[in-house]
Length: 225
Image (cartoon, rainbow, N blue to C red; front, side, top):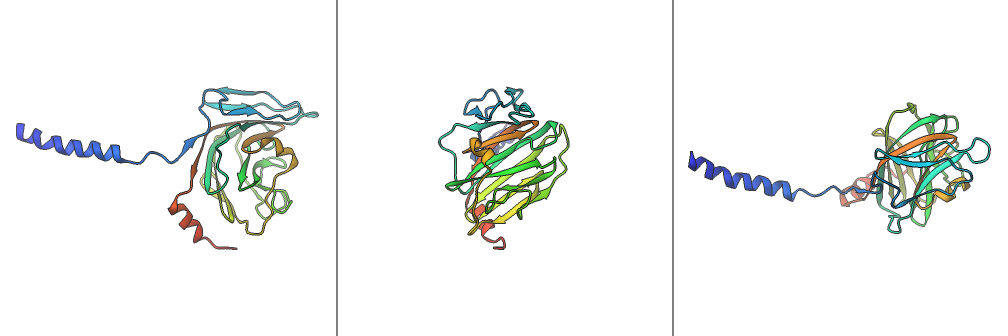
């Protein structure tokens, strides 16, 4: 019995060493789940309240007439601009428009992923060549369920923007020679921020990671049109 125990010890140490050697997650949190450290309420006119509770940022519906938008934007100075991904969970709590539109850096410019605009289902990038998500070639529709948490992921790389909702790829656009921008209403969300429109929305589990060599090799194999 003692010999069997002795033989088990090296095996156990090897197993522990293997666990310790596993690489840490590439994802880096952008929200601590406790407060708005690293974030600030966006300076929208007569915006609704922004609160943090139970690991969630809640953006209350803004004034219907005077200030329909509410949001939060990052105050960090070390945000990536290229070759990165950002992921988050978001849900619509009340209202019928976008509930967590993400504005994000793209090199020296910015772009926005609209989630549920123009009546509640429109998705896409705003703007490409000055054209909104409702009309450009990233336009689509998605059935967002009230109170349901949806998963979002955006990938920014040289000459391409991609986005997923609930693991479904909904945006895959080559940006070579395209003019990338944002609507004037989202200027205050720069460099990185979430916004709602006449809607109460919530976001959580916000994180980003740098693209690695395998990611870039995968992107390089995608069709160029």
